[in-house]
Image 1 (cartoon, rainbow over the protein chains, first blue to last red):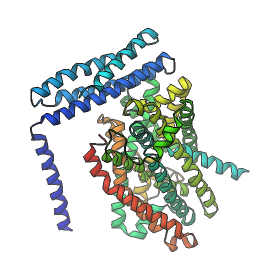
Image 2 (tube, each protein chain N blue to C red):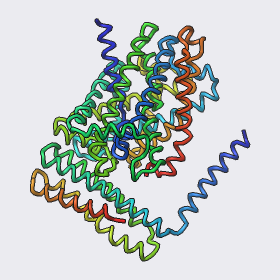
Image 3 (cartoon, rainbow over the protein chains, first blue to last red):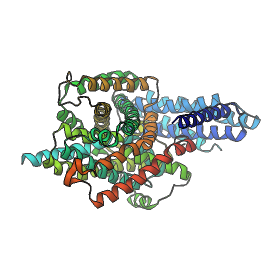
Image 4 (cartoon, rainbow over the protein chains, first blue to last red):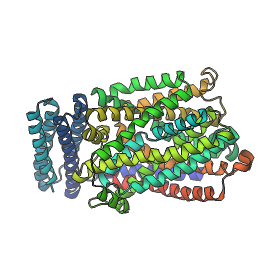
Length: 144
Length: 409
């Protein structure tokens, strides 16, 4: 019983040390690229969802309250993507270039998603917002 | 006639009560990423829950005691304690996720942030658990959960490419862009969503609360073998709706608003109102069940008075455990942990805890001292053992898959 306790304690210690060491290892170009691609993918997903909500609003298929809630969810998703990108250490010039290309797309995504909620019942504004969102989704889909 | 009505009502309740936050999240996430390629897991899971829920119902009806009352007696306090700790922690996490689901459903209807609804939802939950009779509580929310049939109507209304969906059903591999690891992770999550441990605690304790006897075996079996599979169809409709609307354009589902969106797109505002009602009823009903299950497991282990048949004062410790569990569930959510993430984590740990829940059921269901001539037959045992192997594989694979895929990637 005592031996089993030590084994469990040892495993927990190894896991904790691994987690700490993993956090201290300097970021690599590949690791950073992976973070950027994940952020772009998640943001694209949120942008396309907001575009679908905008389409549904244009056709009178959703309530304003639902649009507000769905837009908030989508903006939260993009905010998380932006935080992930901003918080990651940039390992080199190649990564910096990638960051400079993607970060503006993400910040614009957040603003354009909000346009769906602010458009209210205005069909033209909703159409413009969803067109912008689809353009952004294409741009985010092209990040590589 | 009265009996037929009672049986029909029981089946409808079982259908409406089948889907909870785990099913809502796991099925729509999976549909969006894998189309219908993991639908087979839902079928496997539903058969599994039918096999074990039937055993629980039989144990409750014949012995007039819930399964976990017998586990400690049959397996001893030490093994039962391991079972209790694992099962309680998973049930607590599930309770937290369900309360979060209730708050998210109200947010969809009001656009007021869900965190403001969490304490209110928890308070109403506690009042219902304290004041409302067991049968009324179960029936009202189970029947209201039938509103989720709107996913079936929405699916038909979306006029999906049935041929493509059918082809995906037979593709037992991940689509392009997904790995075998993510495929495995979502398979485990879906399986755990179908066999969440609290379902069997609630089913067996509920049988005792409703004073089942041998005469009620038919009711129990109809609930399980008709109600649960039809409930499983709702899960598949959820998955198919996400597969039709999101998978072709590569949208990932991360929120409950996305789960509801296909219904709104297909059926408009009326459909949206019905699906929000359905999500509310499903999560609130499941929160009631998980809240009670938290009390059942602990009270039954320690041999305390339990249940809603006795006055709260006579089952004070049971009601205290329920109240403390609700408060702990609220505390988890008030850390601002995303309810969808809490649900995903609860499914992974449910998978890990599954053997602790299901092995004792199999043992008790084979004990002639409790069940006499109603012990498991050969077919039931063969299915039970087969499922235990699947459960063990899922339990062993859950954590490594979670780490490798980063919670599904």
